[in-house]
Amino acid sequence: VAAPADFPVRVNQVGYLPDGPKRATVISSATAPLAWQLRDASGAQVASGTSTVHGADRASGQSTHLVDFGGYTGPGTGFTLVVGGQASHPFDISASLYDGLRADSMAFFYQQRSGVAIDAALAGSAYARPAGHLGVAPNKGDTSVPCQAGVCDYRLDVRGGWYDAGDQGKYVVNGGIATWEIVNSFERARRSGGDAALGDSTLRVPERGNGTPDVLDEARWELEFLLRMQVPADKPMAGMAFHKMHDAQWTGLPTRPELDDQQRELHKPSTAATLNLAATAAQCARVYAPYDAAFATRCLNAARRAWTAAKTNPNVLAPATDNTGGGAYEDADVSDEFYWAAAELLATTGESQYRDAVTSSPHHTKPVDGFWWGGTATLGRITLATVPGVALPTDDVNRLRSLLTSAADTHLSTMAGQGYAVPIAADAYVWGSNSSVANNAMVMGVAYELTGQQRYRTGALESLDYLLGRNALDRSYVSGYGERASENQHHRFWAHQNDASLPHPPAGSFAGGPDAGLDDPIAKAQLAGCAPAACYIDDIGSYSTNEVAINWNASLAWLAAFAAERRSA
Ligand code: 9MR
Image (cartoon, rainbow, N blue to C red; front, side, top):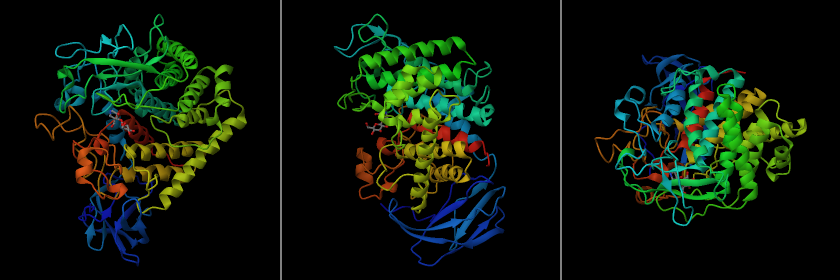
């Protein structure tokens, strides 16, 4: 598939921070440097220079040049970068560049809430809807959900939480990483003095004005659901968490949440889900304590019970085959979830039983690997390396910190080798690749926090450049942000492409991104032969490249909040 040739000058379509990196990529096979001009909104040239020849870029399959106009600091709106007579999309240079994205990428979660009416005054009139899955016909309701045949003989009230993605399933694995990233975003911002921007009355949520930071109000909506998914004390496998709950068959597209008439079912508890609950509930106990001590205690009790249950049932694995009506979220190795849960429990309680679990885990000394819903060790490492006063020997904390900065340096060298400065390798464009980019950017953000070294902030910000338009497809993957932004993400309610009476996704919705696996029929039909970074299509049917998901938006929200703080070393 040919990349669009209409704008061979690829920029962050939203713009650049005055004190941040400012680079663009030009598609050109010229072997000599090209002259470039930066023009302001009136067309006047404000800076100029020559490109650097980068040559072949494996991920995009394109020949590329790099332009660095970081010497110009603006500010202003409507800049264009012109190379060979071709102008880029217009962009801003502004210190408040990421304030809107910080709010909108977080507001996504309110829009995804289950079990509460979505208020037009908060979400915008196009997005208002009655409560989904509260037991009002035709919904069967999440207030009294039976198990799949043979799994249990009782019903559970598992209302609330966020719908996972474009589907209306609710999964403990994935709810866990998404919640952790949002709460971690707040915990990080609090350490660096940027938490006011995530505080009370900063977001369009019903709880605004209650004295608790809005980001924590939003995350609590999911935490309450995760707590409900725990097997009651008087039942078999007490303390474990059900892996997931969703419709018996895949919900048709489109289907408004309140009009879904299918039976919802609880699927068998799993060790992975139980450890996701233990980790996020332990994090909850630590972070919510100043705002709601009773809730923090409830979280800690649930976390301890989940940990004990996982130790008793260490190998109850969710199978890949359980994918009718919902995603499998299968996981054959839960050693990383054990590490993550132990790390959170240690950071919160300081108790030796959790320290022993941390220090005896193979993940405690291994190099830092990328994280995602099925690989969570690095979430634990970030907590242990950044939360003040963790009850670990100083050497251990220092080693974790240096493993994290080494990983960040690896991401920087991956970026440096490419025409588009993406912190993933050419063979890593898998389902949800945009969240791999954002999660690796998070590691660079953490390294910046740990060291104050500007290059890490640069890496995190240039990752946003990629996501917002400086890429093979001249595409911003975030709806509402940039001239060529995705707007047809796979979603059962924001399904305007299929039904004009329904809205497009709200601003701040983050597409999964290029997936070289071509894992859906639209991708197979439309994208055959694509270079990895070009395996994406803004079509509602392409769920493997163009879905939204809570874990992906959480990574964007973390990164946007980091970028919006505009701290300089
Ligand atoms: O994000 C998940 C990705 O890593 C998997 O490869 C893919 C197939 O199992 O599933 C993705 O998660 C989807 C989930 O299964 C169901 N809800 C939508 C999720 C995002 O596409």
